Image 1 (cartoon, rainbow over the protein chains, first blue to last red):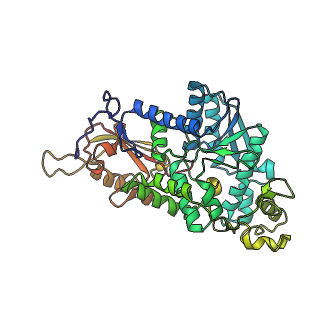
Image 2: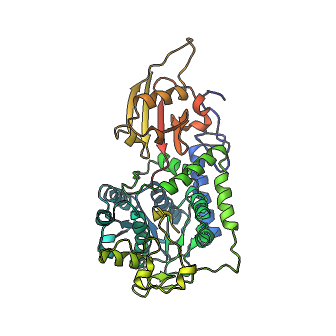
Length: 348
Length: 101
């Protein structure tokens, strides 16, 4: 094989020339067989885990990036082919980042037309009165990802509630999840570690979220998008240095090159992780101000927003919550400082 | 050698935000039979096309993990990666998987 062009045939159909090597199985397969295998695995995951019920209203978290674009395409195809009977919607969050989100939302608008899916956009400006541009102007480039991540999580829930959605699906792929398992181990965040590899999260909350791409390799998502010529947006957020997560990502990618199965193995480790029953976990309650789920008196978004509006944007960053009168006992086992946490778009 | 190079998934930002580059790659032949390989092409691209942050494109003598390479729409993992030989009018595509979701 050295240096020779691939003339080998697809190991599944043996009729067409192989076009790619699957990281999961190392099989060499043609495009047609790849599309089938890719879509079938996702279908099987949906069926086996009973992700959806006929008649469900499903909001697809759509950023215009590769994962959510492929997710919207594949879900609408599977819904049609296998007659799931789902009502699909695109749900986008406009953080108010000029030169980044405005461009990616144009991609979502094109997807809306192409896939015939209704689109709802919720903006930070409408929900919180602040755009990320304004927040960054005030607080600079440190901790801005904390604001954005906390706000995004709620914004998706609010948008889903507006759409009367039964579930939110997100495009998190196997590489993302392996990376998050690793990050949560490094941070010692056992609460997140125990839930970050679940296929469905937030079943006790208002709207559950699920991840149909949980076992889907990023390489295959990008190959699928490329072969199918799907229209997606790929630019890094202008405000995200993303250093810490970047190291984890690079490590995962290095591992994948040596042994592609490593990604699935890390997810498996995350799934098999059990927390000792004697470990104190944060208790889930509701925010006294906005009613959103929270383990504290106020939810993180309200704390951050309060700081912004009072001209004290450092409130809620790090361990300064005493300033707004949180009960002392919360300090010992409450949710940890999220100071070091970068871009929260992958936070489950 | 005339080649068409395509950069996607954010890599185009490293080379003047231009996705498609029609290039003429000169390389030194030791013997008449010598062919341009992907290894040779990568070092040519790094020298001639990449204008900024080369570490986003390459790591060591190969592409950075997470960058997909296709030669004539075929995954280069099927053709020997760096040792893949190139021919006149080939199309080589580089796509980063590392941006956004």
